[in-house]
Length: 279
Image (cartoon, rainbow, N blue to C red):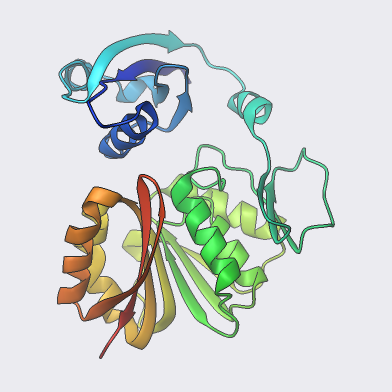
């Protein structure tokens, strides 16, 4: 399968750093059919299957208000796992959690080691939104709790929740490749309390103690009533994948569904909101 590589340079604005401009633009492109991104000195490269490329997509990028330059080239089929392996480095959170791939040597000095093979799924722990939640799970281990992981990607968060003592975890994604990858990663980590579901097949009547939704603003707004239906008074709702400038609109939607904000964590320009169901 051939891929198209789009080399993209963000526009710079007064008062916005280059890193902030990059993060904001990446968030803006979440609805585009890119499978992965690679950061460069001046921006990033977005990879997309050639079958999904189009003149319309190219036109949208060229005319995007936050993009300064765009170029593209066709990348012939190659071993994408090999390319990924050359760049992947373990993610370490204090001495509590280490996220590594199969080809990294184990390090028993960490309390928990997670083995992840992404296969183009989102969730290696490198992105700020994932790291925020990993850190918070360590700080608030879901011991004896029932947890829902919406937009699970690789299921890295579900796997850590299992290792930290959750009694039942449902991992949900709308992408069949993510579901397949999640099942593989769960087996690699010898998890026994994690079930994986395609979103359109997920029809749970369970009430959860913790709901984690690391997606993006528009999906969070759309799914908020679902989170409320699956909550009981006291359920903690963790909302991430959000830029700082979007937190007010997301929290306003959550309040309409009877959640109240109890905590926020920022890893600029990203934010994690933790809310509690009040009735």
